Image 1 (cartoon, helix red, strand yellow):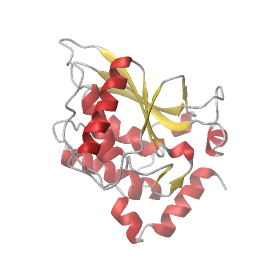
Image 2: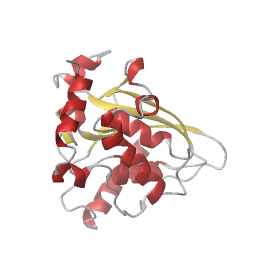
Image 3: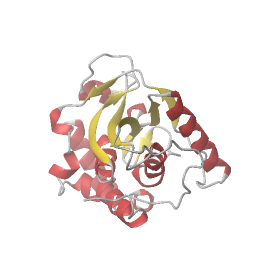
Image 4: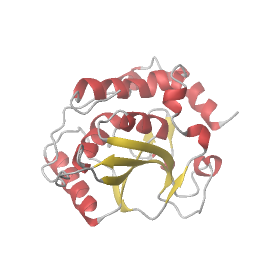
Length: 221
């Protein structure tokens, strides 16, 4: 049985449990970053990289953010070059399921993306797991591409922890981007192409719904 189907089976078994029902798609009212980049005066392409559990859901969320041009699922944070899904799923490569977000800096800021990432895309207080998925490949991480991104991310985490927005400390790693490897084609746009998949219905669709509810000014179809 493939890893993807194991995920689906695990989800079906626990979907009605109280633990999961409290966690799935939950949104938090968190403040905007006090430190952010300046919005570009004209269209400008920028890149951001995030990891927060299964990349299907994280990709789906960012695909619905205004100003985002494209989102690619992939692998980052490890040492193995050109890893494949089965290798990453073994938890031995150091890579995390990640997304590469190409966005227009004149429409949305890096801080806006961070706010979405921390509030509706995943739970940043879960160590090496999200929902039914467990392992370091599902860790919470921000892979910064510039010193400015590093500064904004670290300042925002400190801001959220100080405000005690979450009941537990944020465990999100903030590390320099070393490389990003695209995932296999069948992982790209998975939530969009498989909306009736049980995993998507119960784990990822609520995240997109909460993005629309909590951030209508950022949401786009």
